[in-house]
Length: 244
Image 1 (cartoon, rainbow, N blue to C red):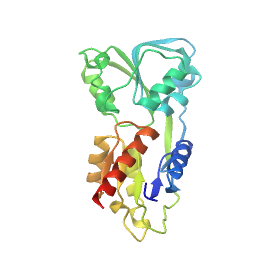
Image 2: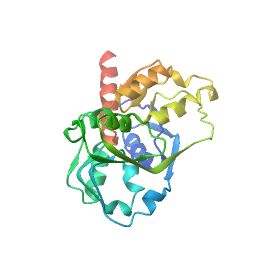
Image 3: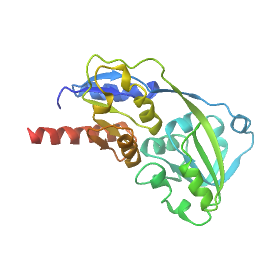
């Protein structure tokens, strides 16, 4: 792999492992978490004292599970849905054996799962972040689902200016909120952040990046995981080498 300079924008508690793997491949990494992930206190969540039963429980991220402990163990459902592989593994770590992974990851894939695609999905609980996009819940409501949303964490924007000495070769952004936050730093550097190639994690994020003005290569992974990010980066670098 070329000795790339990569901007890793994942939250601090998720960035270290990815940075380590990138550095082992010879990359120079600048970490700039666009958000910090902190618990979101909500009475409905913190006051859970009895076992709660649902037809489907959707976990939109590892953070949604991590910040719902320990009351997460009181939740029961016919089906659990993990937004991606890492979330699936987090569910398995909590003893959940009836979890489904959509393909593709994210809301689009989740909505195609048989347990949610029926005209009446039943009682559905969504564990997610505060102010998460409403597309998933609104679509399920239109299908007749009885929706409960519990935000278990919130994203706190990093207000420290992102100032880089030179333009990175590539930036990794793993959420729509992060992508929008990155655009707020466009004026803080001599070069344009909008010219940096990106790795994003869904086709919807790629469309948003284009709408936000990012004009260079926008690569899309098929999963929200370090493995998928590294795999996509390796494919990109292989293609670049073949052009030389």
